[in-house]
Image (cartoon, rainbow, N blue to C red; front, side, top):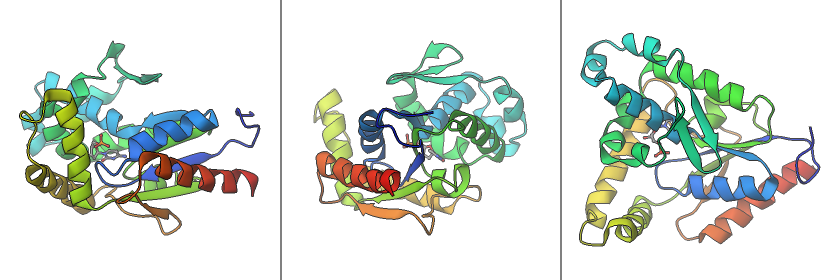
Length: 232
Ligand code: DC
């Protein structure tokens, strides 16, 4: 299969902590390459929404086996920028606070990781994908031709989140930069310290620090890295 720029299709894995600029960078990069963008965070968020709606969350804290049944026939699909869970557009619902609060817990469960691993590997089987998350280069596609690990200073990430939230709901409704930084540091710890597929850099991953760069600069850096692989 040939993609838009006529090269052998590859997998580009982009991992990194929350608010490091992964999804914006990955989405634009995929557009430039004519590749499919897969936001695996949105998949974990969709599963969290499904668990919440099923009223299963508290039971899972004691025994996580029940979730395997819930996820057996789950259908998660990306259509353009939208995410569909079992046929329903949940693009907004998965960004609600109730989901954000519980997604770290739900994504730490082994049956959840096993099921999403399976779905993600199916989605990337034909290659020509940019997939972002926490464990793409280490667990989902350790054979990805290009692995990128995006990092950014927690304070910078908090400022970005703050700007984003202020734009959405007004600056008064947004948590302070300090509160957001605390939340981000906690989520980093949760993601790095969990037992199954923790956030970790693959030894081959190229580290890109976005603390001081604009989106345009980040995108051109990763686009250049992709071109080096495609032309190499
Ligand atoms: O990228 P995000 O912030 O929307 O991801 C939400 C949560 O999902 C994040 O706290 C960790 C989890 N996640 C994961 O465990 N593995 C992935 N590949 C992607 C996300």
